[in-house]
Each structure stands twice: as structure tokens, then as C-alpha cells.
Image 1 (cartoon, rainbow, N blue to C red):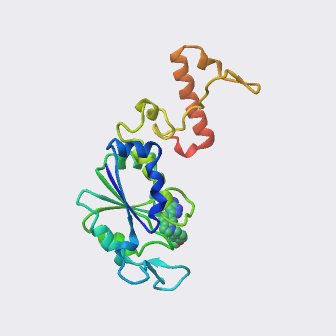
Image 2: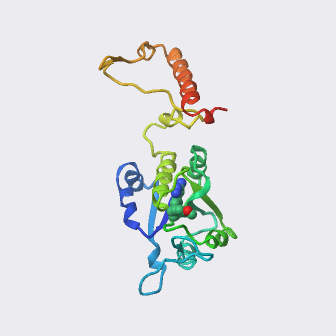
Image 3: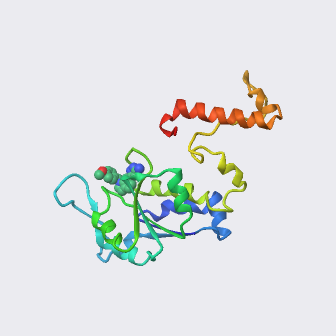
Length: 225
Ligand SMILES: COc1ccc(Cn2ccc3ccc(-c4cc(N)[nH]n4)cc32)cc1
């Protein structure tokens, strides 16, 4: 999979060279390009924003630099992902969907967002998805993009050591995962549920399934079918 990120803070994505993502890049599982939006400006101040039509607080990102940057990146099969507080909800299902794609381009806005015509223009010939990672407001699209890259890339075959571990995770099956424990069996007066040390794999499977439903009902009833 190829990922391209356009941002006015390219250094923000230096962290993509460490941990799982760094290894994936070394192994050729993932190819990531980070591009500075200001490289697509032509004035002395490398201007990327201007005042909003209709007035209002803050600044809006100009369409021209985005047009030039994205013209050079988008292929017919690409999906343009635009993080936004007003986007569709990014869920594990959307992560799974994006993980099957060959090329994702993330447009990281700042200020009060990107001129609306950028998404409108590229939707004429490409798939464009405006995506929110949650109902709170960030200062820009970079954190949202980082979260999405992590959620998507770990679903790419070969990325995570044990693919089995993904199946039992929260949200993978639509519910929250059961609580996890490791040694010691007793810790500060707290014991590990005996069933997990029984060796009875059928009972363990059932306990985890029950725990998953019970936790989902109590913490995230909205996820229940
Ligand atoms: C119109 O109100 C505002 C509009 C944008 C902003 C700041 N901002 C600029 C670009 C950008 C991209 C994504 C996000 C974002 C995504 C989620 N889930 N929360 N926040 C925030 C973003 C502040 C306010």
C-alpha cells in the first residue's frame, strides 16, 4: 500500500519511521510519502491561508496550493481522505475498508479547514472521503491522519506478528474485547479469574465471549447489535 500525506507540518510525521510502521516500510509492506503543502505555493511568504468569505473567525486554507499538491499525487485508483470534525465517523469498519486500498492520500488541513471546493473538485474524478476520528475538535488533520494510518496499517497482512490477535480485539467483531491478564496470578490482593488458568479452552472461550458482551453493554451499549 502507498500512503501520501500533505501537511504544513511534515516533521510531525517523522515518527512514522519508528515502531511497527518503520519496520513495515523497511519490509516494503507500506510506502509512505510526506509532502509540505508550502512547496506548492509561489509567493515569497509561501501563503497557504486567507480570510473566510462571509466573514467569521480564523482563516481558511487556500484552494490553489492544495490543487497543485493533489494534482501531482492522485491516481485514478486513489482515495483522497480529508480529516474533518464534520466528516463521516472513522470506525474499525472504515479502517478495514481502507486497508484493502492500494493508494490513500491524506490532506491534513489546519486553521478552520480547507476551502470546500478542494474536496468538491477532486470528487469529480476521484473517491473523496471526509473523515472524523471522534466528536471533538483538534487543531488540524495531522493527529487524525496519524491515528488512521496506525489503525489501517496494522490490518495490512504481514504487519502484525500474530494475525490471530487482531480477530479478538475490541471493535473487530463489533464488541469490546474481554479483560486481559498475565502473571503473577495474585497481584496486590487481586486474583486472575480462575477459568483463565483452568486449561479448559471451551470454558475460556465462553467466558471471554460473555465478558465481551457484558463490557460492551456496560461501557458501549451503542455498539450492541
Ligand atoms: C469549523 O470549525 C473548525 C474546523 C476545523 C478546526 C481545526 N481543523 C483544521 C483542519 C482539521 C482537520 C481535522 C480536524 C478534526 C478531526 C476531528 N475528529 N476533530 N477535529 C480539525 C481540523 C477547528 C474548528
